[in-house]
Amino acid sequence: MAKMHSRARGKSGSTKPLKKVPGWAPYKGPDVEKLIVKYAKAGKNTSEIGLLLRDAHGVGSVKASTGKKVSGILQEKGLTKEMPEDLRNLIKKMVYIQRHMGKNKQDQTAKRGLLLTNSKIRRLVKYYQRIERLPSDWKLDMDRLKIYLE
Image (cartoon, rainbow, N blue to C red; front, side, top):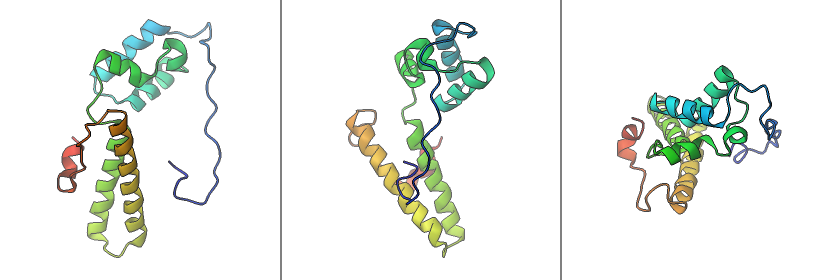
């Protein structure tokens, strides 16, 4: 979604790591799953877990070593949160923009950013309702935005 609202072409994403686990890798499949569960119980979200595994433990690709993604492992173990991480981050961004707009009423750039963020949230909600990650009657309550961030 990064290039969705701009005319810039941008560059493609980063190079994916190898599909197979190298022989020198310190952790294999079950060990990686244990680390993921440990960090999830410590309150880390999926992106933080991935960064910790890459930077602190030398795990290049969780999917290559376990055959599943981090979110799939957490879902298997029953450790997923009720609201998806990307939706939560967009809601947090919307709260910050609204707080900024309260202080700076004439900021047209922030106003546009709020509209774009709002449309991204609506698209994500439709997607998560379609794949049944959110209930079909879930609505974003604008009066209670801060509750979603707890």
